[in-house]
Length: 468
View 1 (cartoon, rainbow, N blue to C red):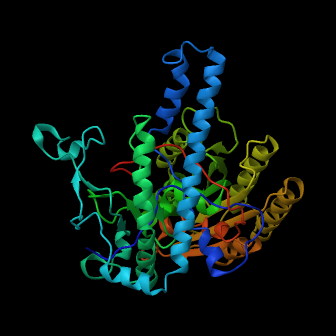
View 2 (cartoon, rainbow, N blue to C red; view 1 turned 90 degrees about the horizontal axis):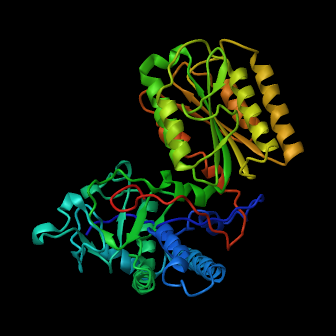
View 3 (cartoon, rainbow, N blue to C red; view 1 turned 120 degrees about the vertical axis):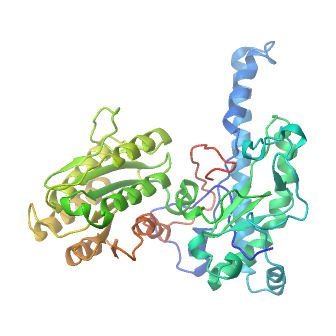
């Protein structure tokens, strides 16, 4: 047994255009929300909608189709209700974090998927899940081990600074303690899910929770193939729960100086990480600038200068285009911001927007060497943000990142502060540009409202022994 931190599966959040009361509990609610994604739900929905052509062929087609659609709605409603119940369980556990029961639970620690032997572990049946890396259960071997009665916790390797890769941060340790109180609910829920989903010939999925400090707890407990590589805060389900739908524009410096110290590769990695956190509720665009600015398009898109929906397909196409960016030229701040605001306004005018938060992530490694002066850049930003607010009731936040010792710090800081955004300086050798850029959504989390029934969905993706 190891001391670890835990989190849950999927995500629900509260999103309104007003700030919630600034109590510690309400601020944490933005991170205690969960949204459950069930693997195979699309298969279930498809099966139900096809049933009128097979098992229900004696019924009128239209009537059967209506019945099937209603059944799908009930399934989705059940998933959302389960999400809200899990949210409530974790929040209740949080309020008991200083109780005798919590401290008693904490004394026995939590299991983890890297070195723990689970108390009730068993081999997975081939009809449950097949893990090819474990032999797939062929020849009488064990397909893979799991424990349906025990939750496990994990943290990113950067936070595992104690003995045996345990955390040393008091908040992480506390989170591991109090989330253990939710294990009974997670266990009971899985038992009920097995019964429910068996009627659709579908295995129930994991239940998991992700905390704002990087702790992740899930049930059933499984053995992990890799340890310390997973950070729930960088997953789409977590960001969707914490920030709500949003329009995101990345403005990337690709001037000649970006070739120094591997900055170009670092900027690409950071931009790609941000894009991976987005969900189908979000819209995204990437602007590259040097002497001039242009919108980065995929090789197969139509070239439209709008933000695109952050589907898996669109994200993969954008990522491929980002990887092909090259450096060269001067540094024109004004061109980059002009292109970003033009894309935003066109998107909003054509109602192709998320309708909620607007974030511009601006990254540069130098000072302005081309285009209008800094005062004109600030004027452009102030006029454009005011225009979006007046005409479209949209609040725009700009997050600026100064990469390297030569990067402009005065102008980039003033740009961020002018929109109540955040400025972050990042060193060439000791900074974390990827982590800094991927954490922009936390500012939006502080402004989430109190819509306690709101749930957010993300696209289905491969779950087991992959990225959650």
